[in-house]
Structure formats: structure tokens, C-alpha cells
Length: 270
Image 1 (cartoon, rainbow, N blue to C red):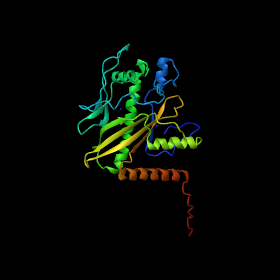
Image 2: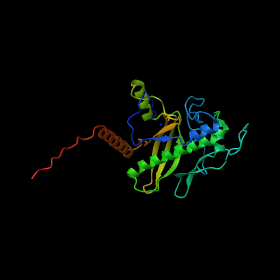
Image 3: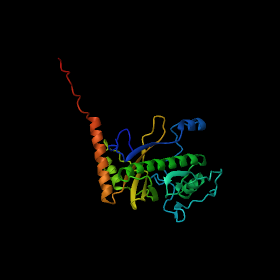
């Protein structure tokens, strides 16, 4: 503001709720600039706690603008100046405004407050990845919304980061990976968000759960992420849509693996 796979453990059947998202960073250019391997991503996916998560504390919200209270002042012992400009997202906050992403300086301050050691020169890259993943998550939310809400005025009312709180679905796949390690990956998501979406025409608010996973990297070492976005099972309508999408995707996978036999048609002779 990922179901992760590996070479030994395949992820669950992909569905519309799972969207792989490649890292927006040009790692070849980064490697040429830093004289390091392209596989050396500046983003550390293993913070001190052992569980990667968004560094922004989404629980500390300013009620005036519904954004985290993040300082724009340089941190103690900071050696370089970081941009304080904030990027406007594509995510509507209401009918007349959109959400703003934290500036690189605010992002760095959040890292420092949490005790994460991150080189200052990599902060802008990390902000790019943070913003990119949120844009991808919103696109997935819109895909769900278009199935049931025939208007283009949905907006993100509020959100909450819940790192370390595994959703029931994440726990299920982790258990499946523990029971059948050769078939499923038991790596947990590195972050979780809950987003509440407004449907102005009906007055409804729908909660979405987003699990963020790390996926196998590209051949050049560029990181890949996977987002599992779906409506929370808070009501019958969301349950119905979850079942409907799962059924559609399972059927599409079956048809792709078992195409109908070709029919031989004989042209009649006179």
C-alpha cells in the first residue's frame, strides 16, 4: 500500500484468485550499475522476524486522511536525502480522490522504526515494488467486483495489514504442503492485507483478503510474486462467488487437460 511454488512442490490449481506479478525492477540494469549479479535483488524477503511483511504500519491511521502517520523528516543517522513526494495510486478512496502511496522517506522511516536494516540506495526500488503489488491487488479486486457489481464506482474504503495472521485458506495449503510435500508447497504467505471495498450504488461494503506469496524467480533471478485475492467469507454472496469461480477454473483446467476428441466427418459422394 503469493501461493508460492517451488521446483519440488507445485502450488494449488491456479484460479482467478491467484495472480503472478513480476517484480517491476529492471534487475539487468541494476546489476550493470552495481556490478552485482542480476539475482541480487535489493529487496530482502527475510526481515529480522523471519516473516516478511509490509513495513508500513497500517494500524496507525490518521482519521483526517485515512493514511498512516509517517514522518517526512530524515531518520537518525540517515546519510542521504530521500524523495518526499508521494505517488498517487489508481485506487479510488471515494468519488473525488485516490489513495496516495508513502514517499521513499516515509517508507524508510517505517523500516527504521521496525528495526529493519535496508541500504538507503535501495529504498526507492522497494517503494516501486510495494506500489506495484498494491496496484496488482486492486486489479484483482476489480475482476471480482465486475462479476457481481455492474458499476464502475467501487472504491477502497479502508484497509488493514495483518502480517503473521494466516487466513484459513493459507492455513489449508500450508497443511496440505505438510501432509503432501511432494505435491504442495507449505511456504506461508509473507504478508496479508484485508481491504474493505465500497459499492456506492447498493451501499454495500465487501471485505477482501489478500495473501502475498513469493514465487520462483525468473531465469535471470528477478523475483516474482503471487497474490491470492478473494472476497472474505462474510456473507452468502461472497461464498457463492468463491464456489462459482473455483468451479469455473476447475472445469477450465479439466477441459484444457482433456480436450474433446476430434470428430471425423465423411463427405458424402454423389
